[in-house]
Image 1 (cartoon, rainbow, N blue to C red):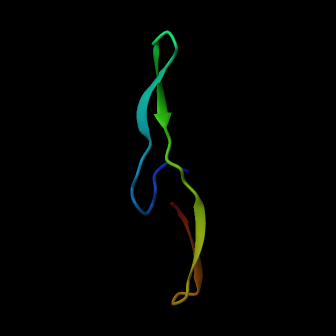
Image 2: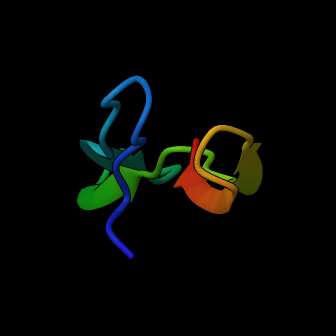
Length: 51
């Protein structure tokens, strides 16, 4: 599963870990995603979204 919200389109951001000695190493700030199921009454189906 990709780390992109299907509703808002938010993606993971890049940044740096900074140690006590001020060394910078690359890292990612992932989006806080949850999988949710919604029932679509007109089509009588369940839809799964990650938001």
